[in-house]
Length: 442
Image: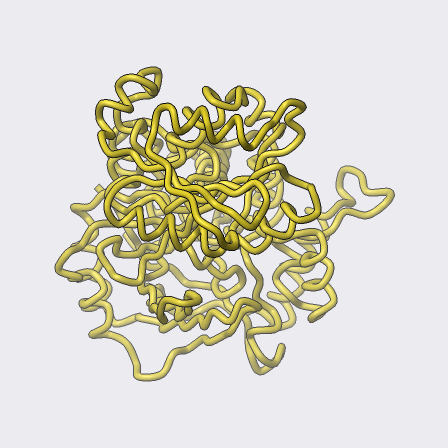
């Protein structure tokens, strides 16, 4: 199953760059244009200059953001801004974060080099489809730098917490790397180079499957890069390019948090809030109440503790919550065109029934970016509702870990923006070099 190796990580020399918090960044795919510019301004050696550089007028082949990324990367290695660890290690990684109105969590895992395995071989399980453009971007960066700048986030099941327990035995008291990001998430990394601790973790991982939580594009790009390198240099089990930088986390740990992504609908020419409510009530029980979108979200969470529930508001002052008292029968009657592992997911109940069948928003329209907006923060949806940018806001409960695992194992994929594993993994904490001469231990 999972073949994990230690590696000689490349990291910032904090003595040269100052506080690590100023040079790390979120993953490229969650950085807005405004955040991209701000990160470039924050520090002249912020990792964003390599991982998500900005295009310039006059860019062309050999003189573009990828060439600049390679120049920064090699220059920082040459002048000591970036340094490579002397011995192969695994890297124990904690993220401490707080969810408003809930509690503080600590997500625990480790960074290692996972041997690449195509989907379908029973080792690595995806849960979403990928797009060609992001993969082209990531491949161009990888070709320019011969490195993985940002880890893929993978989950494994370990109810006894044996993998991380073994690694902790080889840890020092204080972390080697520490940073706080713009969301207040505290990142801490310990270098584990003790052979006994590494061997124990690697041996325990050998019988496990890995479920991709975040980073599908990066994973598929790593396979494409590996195949290019194999064509040039052959299959080589000890080559770093046969592997991918992966953050591996125990899905049975209480620090795993999946947040919902809410929806807003817009630009429907004949939308009527009253007519929509009447159509839903004809099929499902609906409870209504006065309150804000935040109140609606709390009502959805409360109802969701007993079963599936979806809430919405069209004016921001009165909300409605639909429940599904006979879920199997409802799914069989109304969602029979979806595979059984998907039918009962909150996001499928919303898109497959409420949006498509009641409002007439087709799946093709959603894929094309028409009529539906996505929100991680209910307050942002409320603001757009008040300005008329959307006609109604819909609120969901998050996908559960058992649902996530079940869909991944079924061979199907979740709908677009169904999972939001919080927080994101930091970019710039560790870099994994995958050039032709880079190796991992046999």
